[in-house]
Length: 131
Image (cartoon, rainbow, N blue to C red):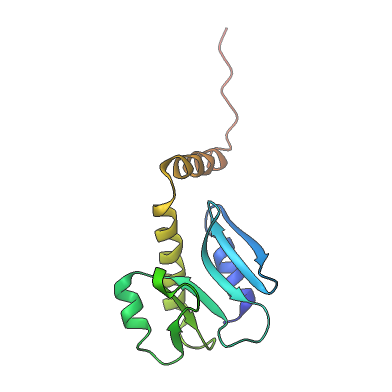
């Protein structure tokens, strides 16, 4: 797994956006709120994401996984190496982070994103009125 793998996976999630912040971090967001961060330059960690309090306690016991600098109090973890989690596990945790962040968005934002999702799926042309 590498930055491109994470980027491709995160961009598949509905309404996920990406931006470069803080100079060297690729940040993935839903509704303007972060759900994953990839460091683009060599650093102590390469990927951070939100998890549940239970997952936080479990994951930080594993080698290569630490509480995320600056955001551990919000249950974010950081992977020190690209092989700290297997691909299926990482997919599950990234999707979980996305879902947790979406669930905390204001209802108005959630509704707007859900409506936009429904509109994008309905590509049929409107029916013509019979005269």
